[in-house]
Length: 184
Image 1 (cartoon, one colour):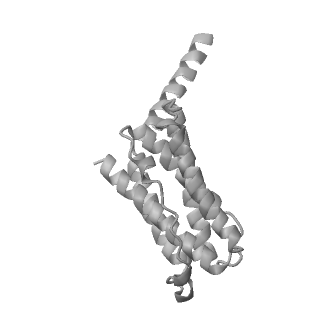
Image 2 (tube, helix red, strand yellow):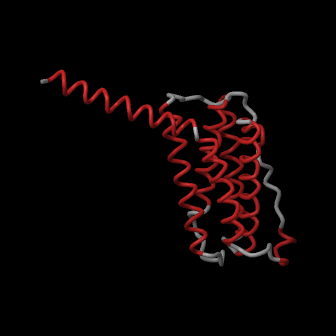
Image 3 (tube, helix red, strand yellow):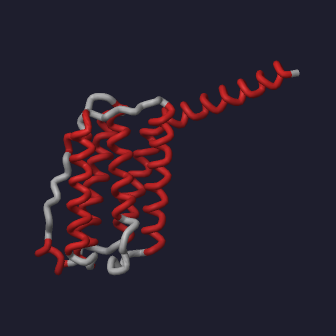
């Protein structure tokens, strides 16, 4: 009686692990789709870059070296962290952004779902990489803190949000480029 129960539990665990690993194997394709969708939603959220904001251009200098490690798992960890930061930025004081609310919500949901999938795959493979040392994590944190500080300094005005939206577009394009190169 107990043996049959253990066999059933074992079978369920085996099926779960198999399905989970298949999902993780298709993650690069899913990531590319989510990135493409996120880029379209960023465009849909707002209109063209406002002329009055051209004077306020800001260079945040994305630390591209965080996406250059040789190990795919390390890149997954970096991408997951970048998406978390983008999600955090776009979950804040958006009242002056004047964006399409439905597109913004879809953008946030897509990011959240991708973060969840990445976290699950990273944990499943027991990848607790200190991804190319803690230095890269700190570089990313500093980069996103600059953006956050810029938004606060400008009191989350329309131009600061538009500049931030353009910068997040650049981040997503860099991630897409890395995914395409890494998973050819």
